[in-house]
Every structure is written in structure tokens, then in C-alpha cells.
Amino acid sequence: MNRREFVSLLGRAAPAVAVTAALGGGYAVGVEPEWLEVRRVRIPVKGLDPALEGLRLVQLSDIHRSAWVAREFIERAVKTAVDLRPELVLLTGDYITKDATAFEPLGREIAALGAAAPLFATMGNHDYIHYYAWEKPALPRGAEFVAAMAAAAGGELLRNETRRVAVRSGAGAVDLVALDDFWAPTFDAKLPFGAGRTAGVPRIVLSHNPDSFRQVRGASFDLMLAGHTHGGQVRVPLIGPPLSPVEDRRFIAGLVAADGRLVYVNRGLGFNRRVRFGVRPEITLLELTRAA
Image (cartoon, rainbow, N blue to C red; front, side):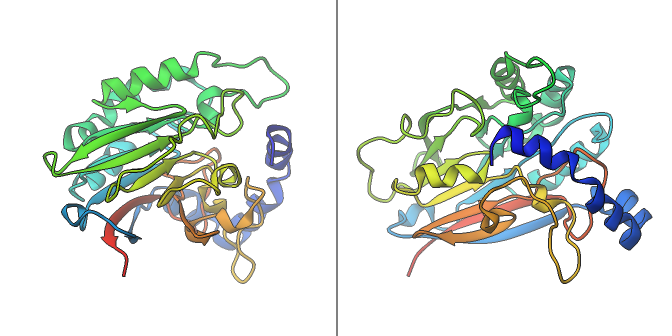
């Protein structure tokens, strides 16, 4: 799915919203959008360094800081995430919705995450706002804004690069392979992958849009973390999500085994339209374990 197709998809979202209103009414608008859920997922890794057994990674995605996704909700989510005692915090894009002034307060609001553990962020499409065909790009300097936000939170933005991160006081390490947003002209799936790997060091790919999997599925890695979909944001009973902004519908939410790789798609914290039904906002705790 490309940018133009996604914009068209948004325009067709009204029927799904109407179905949700009929099914859930005030619940879908007033309750579920801020009813946080912590998802705990064990990730088996072949040849994992024994020193990394049980390593705790917290993923947050699609915060969409705006007038509709406010400070109080974000700070509550951050406290919940910190209480999970993360050893590494990974943010997978879409920090705002159109308003670039939201980056600055968001950096302060998530700072407790960077104080709790090493924090790394990657770009999302809303952080560039390059896909709105009817207007000029609102954030051509989006990466600069996200880099400043991540730095204010005590973390770092990664784009099309690999970073080895020491964890557990240097007893072990994790390789993070961070891709730029799939729809950005700067997306490069080949650049960050090196020729070889280090035994015992897990390799985790960070990519906002899970459709980018088809660009990296031939590479060697243990886990890909993505967001973007909001889990469809509306899950109709017996039908599932009527709409989702991905071409490969395996990657709407949760843990997916594909082509010998594991992909986890986070349902996100925020929203573009204040409605969720059967798709609660998510904080993900991933625990690495040695594969049998």
C-alpha cells in the first residue's frame, strides 16, 4: 500500500466509524481509546546469549500527540511502561498528528522512559506528513523534530542504521536495525544490514510500517517491531477490522511468524480519530528467551 492508497483509505473510513458508533456508542469514543492494555509477549531467539535470558523490552508506538491525545493520557501510559521495569525502550514512530508544536512537550512527557532505560526511536509517516497529496509537506524537517524530541527524553533517533546497544551493565548486547519510514523517499532497507552477525547478539529491526517486511524478509534478524496499523482501530465482531492501512493483512496486530521471521505489530497508544472498538491502546512488554 502506497501513500496515495492510504489517503484514499482514510476517506473510506466513515462506514467503519458508523458501524462502531452503532455497536459501541459512547464506549468506543469515551472509554476504549484511553483504556490501556499491557501485552506481555515472550520472544524465542535462537542462540541467545544466556546473559540476555529474560531481557525486557518495552515498545510504544503511534502516540499521535494532539489535542485529542493529551498529556494526562500519555503520562499515565509512560508511568505504566516504566513500572514494567524495561531494560530497553523502543519507539516505532508516529509521535504527532500534523501539529509539529506537539513534539516539544512530548519530549518532556516521555522523559521518564529515557530515565528508566536506554531509549531509541524511529520515524513514522505522520512525523514527515509527506503523504498528503493536497498540500505541501508540512514537516520536511521531521527527522530533526523527532531527533530533538528523543534527545529531550534522554534517547536517540535512528534512521537507516544499525546500533549495537550494551545491556545489563555490558554483560550482553542487542543489535538494533532501524529503518526510516517505509513511505519516505529516504527509506533504505539495504543500508543498515551488515554482512555478518555476532553469535549470541539478537538482531531487532525497527520499522514503523509492517509492509516494509517484504523488503527485509531475506535478511538475517530475529524480530521486527512495527506499528502504524492501530490494530485496525475498529474490530467488528465476527468480521475483524474492516480497514487497515497495510497491504499484507497478516500484519494488523500482534505476533506474526512469516518466512521464518517474527514480526510484532503494536496497536499503538493514540489515534487519528477518537474511536476504538475491540482494539485497546497498547504497551508491549517483550521478553527475550532462548529458543528450544
